[in-house]
Structures are given as structure tokens and as C-alpha cells.
Image (cartoon, rainbow, N blue to C red; front, side):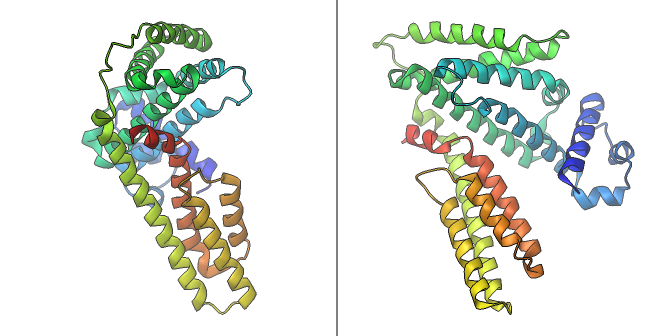
Length: 313
């Protein structure tokens, strides 16, 4: 299935779930809307739960991308923050059907994988709020950053609910500026004598969940690379080609496992493309599995988890 076709399937299924509800929508309903057979459905998704997870991942990726899409040169840090929040509201307003589905379904009962994924995304978003608040308001707010991020998250979530109810066009930038002015007032109200309510110990379980997920992904990628290198040695290839591919896999692992900085996407994609262009049939399936694991890893890294980790230490 091409990526474009997969997106079309996901968006059609999401609208069905939003209209009829998850439990009231059958696989037959889905394949009828897609115009394919049940056999073809199971070729792409292992179950209805798997499809729902793919839907949530697709829309969360779009939502999180809207937070980071504003260029670095968009004025001051505060102005960029306003534009990022505005883009976030605009994205959710554009995908109101998804918001409706999220508000009406009981995801923990559908799948533990979905529940786990949503918890991870909440952690990433909270981490991003913490990072941006410090970048906008300075390190002096760091003592209260968890409280401020919690209040900002609460305001955004409640206004999201209002976005869902609003039939008219949303004035996303006006709303974002309004919220940031409220944030200004909240931050100005803190006194040095006032102790924060939230601290790193209270939030440690969130960090531990993320760290565990991070290490699992690292181990998965290392295992894929080791498997490919072992297979490489068993193939009848030119020794120079064999050496270059082995070195490319080493370079890929080094780029991905760097603890000091996020992996550079152009480097990672360049290495994967280089290996793919060697046209080794025996590598095709394993390379596709590696690329999928790398994509998941890169998505996780995009939300600058290292800053979050430093704040928790």
C-alpha cells in the first residue's frame, strides 16, 4: 500500500468511527467504504484495534508537527510560541472529526497499546510545553515550570473542547495571543516565597515510562542492524561493497545512538537510501523493518526528550 493510499484509508475509517462510534463500526463497514475485501483489510491491518492505533498515530503526528512547524526566524521566542499555539488550534479545528472521535471513545478499553501510546504523547506534549515556557520566559521560571505547563495544558485542552463546539471559523491567532497574555499574568504572579505544587519527583513516573520506551527502541534498532551485518557476511558480494555497507550500518547506528544530540534526519535518510540503492534482494524485508523502527525512533526524538531528561535529573 502506498503511503498516500494508506492515509486515504485512515482518514475514511476515522470519519466512520467519529460518526458511528468504534464499537458500532464493523470491519465490513470499513471495507465497504474503502472498496476492498476483508482479506485485503487484514493484509494491511491485523485488527480493528490496530487500525484505530494507526488512526491515532496519524493524527497525533500531524498535531505534534503543527507545534514545531513555525520557522526559527519568526520574530521573538514569545511570538514564535504564539504562532505555534495558533497553528495547534488551527490544526485541531481542521480535524474536528478526529477531535470528536477522541472525545467520545474510551480508548483504554479498546487496547492497552492505544492507552500506552496516548500516555506517551501526553508526556511528549508536556515536555514540549516545559521547554518552550523556559525558552520564552527564562530560567527564572524553571522552579515553577511544571505548574505553569500544567495550567497551560489545561487551558489549551478546555479551549479545544470549545473549538469542537464552534461551527464558525476559528480565530486561532487571536485565541493564542489571549492565552499567552493569561500565561504572562500567571507567571508574573509568582513570588519567591511561594513553593511550587508540582516537582520532578511527582512527575518521575512519566519520565521513567518515556525512558523505558526509548531504550526499547534503541535495542530494537541495534538488533536490526546487527542482523543485517550478520546477513551481509553470508552473502556473495564484492568485498568492497560488503565493507561499505557494513560501514554505512555502523555510521547509522552511531548517528542514532548519540546521547548528546538528536540524530540528523538527512544523515539517517541518506544512509538508508544508500543501502537501498545497492539493490540487494536478500536485504529488502529486513531493511524495510529497520527503516520502520528508525522512523518511530526519529519521531520520538523530534520532541527534544533530552531537555526533558535534564530537567528531571
